Image (cartoon, rainbow, N blue to C red; front, side, top):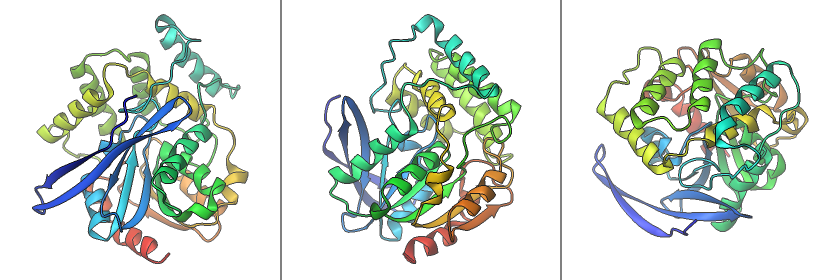
Length: 326
């Protein structure tokens, strides 16, 4: 992948202020990870790790703006197999039998049989820490959501000297199982996306709406120009190849038990979870609270899996206190 290193200046219409960021790539062997470093350069760095299929542009603007306004330096990136980061060439599976592969993976998942994946969550954790290395950041705050929270657990456990605080949102510390995983309706939509990686733009947007309607705040309006434009932008950044979504699912389902690793996390930890989360059940948050010593748990009553503005407003002060107290 071509190396990017350029300054982009954007106008934040809400505050009429200029904010800048740089974008670049870091290599983990033959895998390039594309990242964005928001200013200010002298701000307190915080590394944000995205969830399944999420790109760096999918972090909510209200979260990024909040961090910048409070003198933090958000660093976001495309996980491998998403956005502008490298796609993983898995020559074991041809295009014709890719759907069969993900179906077989789910069958083995429900039968609690071992699953083969192209890479592991540990590989993705290594991708993440290399960004801090390249930016010459000794210590940073760490925030992970959903699959990104699983990756962030590994980062926090493996690199305790690099992490100031840890924030875990809508995630799980356990190996996925039929008992703590998605509801049937959510699982069906995830399967549909996995089995149709070459769908048209409109089909992909329609599928996203259906998924967001199930895992996002109930009644939240998705029939907006903003949602449509953001969806188109995400598709344009990632290109026609959406097969990385399936490989990320395989990495999650094939992940090894992290219980012992999570127990070693030393960073001050804040756990945030939606009471109504249909993708990762709220009992996972209570389990994380027991495993991570002295961690603090905040359950948001109407929150599902995402952090829309009404949801964020309910925990942003808790988050700020957590980050500032380090």
